[in-house]
Image (cartoon, rainbow, N blue to C red; front, side):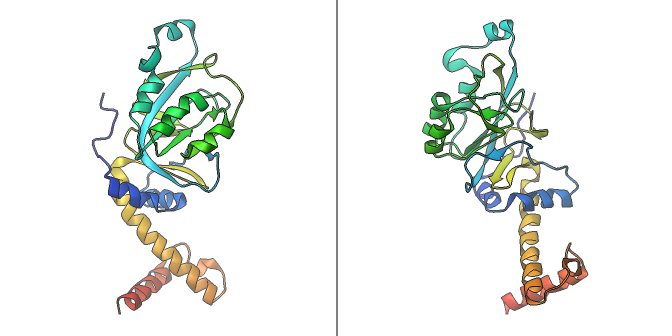
Length: 241
């Protein structure tokens, strides 16, 4: 069905997106009138981590005995298929059926650690957080839980368009996380977002510097207006001189 974007984000572009704050990426998308793409409920399990990678998606569905019977077993189970598609430049994005439902714990996620994945994002919860902390990859989720997952939901869809935390995620989209949360940058917009976000970062630096030198209401320069643009061009000229 062509769930993955036809646009492939290069490793270089991915790294540059990962250097930017999530809020700046959101702002850049808004400049082009794209909807908010912050995944609600995906909070950093371990603060202070930065995450970036191309999305590999996993969709859970509510448990039913016949669905469980039809689900492939062993290494062919959908979550394990998704795991093997992940590496250092991929982030597994899992869509749960509820915020407190477990998408997995230490045994399953040991494989993600072995794959050296870029990160794990879920709008559900995870188990065994004390062990996950030592696995080394960033985890963003609703919370931690002691609950088992299989009695509530089953992994089913792999690398298809999903809704995670109220946000559409397409395989291959850039997934960027920091202490403020997780933002989806659609692959088709990645180059444009990088260009806009980089300029906005420079402008915000100019505005903050000017307000520190001449304290006053931020509205004089912010949001971005003619005065801001003049300051930005002036600072650029100084840098080029």
